[in-house]
Length: 331
Image (cartoon, rainbow, N blue to C red; front, side, top):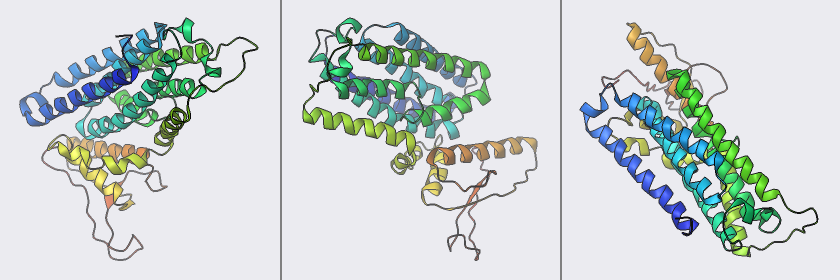
């Protein structure tokens, strides 16, 4: 497997887990007895954390660039499973946010490994030491893709992992701690890779061994990692209707995504409930709206709970046709 083409391996590491996760979410949406199982959330949470922690710690101890990508991909799959363990109104949008970041990160990572593999005997640390000075685009691509997987700020993987970590901490502080341990392992592997690629002899000169096409493709991929990290609302246009593919799991998520993308007027509204259970549900809806608004950076400046309202005249004070998200029976 170590001798296989990194680009082919990267494609398989993206397509197979992604398809499996989507089909698994479809089963949860279709079968109510499975969706309502009291052990489902605990099982998914345990499996996701196990993959994140073991993938992160094993990646931190590897001395082969290909193995680091493989173990980081295991941790990536753990993030997706962990998102499914959350409330579907939160987990499904986060799941679809993880997919583009993973695809772009693996594309840059595998292409960079392919370029380096063509110019090195193996992908072990000893054979690629100091390659930053000879193949700078590929070396920087590996570093940025690895940091993106580690939830480094300003990169593509950061917004979705931040939302996942924040909501997991509300469910279980212990689970959030284990998630942090896995991220520390991934960050350790990223910094080790950075150190090895930059450790060259003192008087080694800088040269560019990549051809112009490889440089352009890697440059565009690295720019994309920063764009998805700095402006995650760009990708929301394409993801807004995806949660609605699940009739039950993604119903509310799809409604809120559509309302955000139509730039509906957002106003603070005080909601009164009759029972404490409904109050809890109302607070969950508020937190979900705030979370999605934070991710897409499309919310009003006031720091209050929001309910979405559509205005017939751009919210300029005229008569409004308010469309509130009401409590539904499936909540």
